[in-house]
Image (cartoon, rainbow, N blue to C red; front, side, top):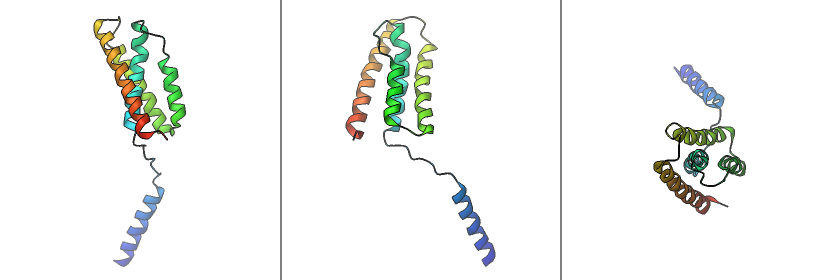
Length: 123
């Protein structure tokens, strides 16, 4: 019985040691993913409605570079950006009042989210 327990403990230890370390997300990760999603939506809507010339994709790339995330987080941020883009691309083919309203609301939300991340988590 003692050998079985020792073997079980050794096996558990080996499994734990063999498990790759999982990176812990920073506390602002969810907000960053939401901001990325918003920026992807803006990247689609802004040219559709001729509402400015911000390059949201370039700004997203700069934001990712400044955050310097690991590959998993980088992929999630890029995925959120792409999800935001495709969510609006599915339903909007022309600049309608609904698209303009969404654009306005997304700009406000992006500003608030970016300000909140900066205020709470910037060094």
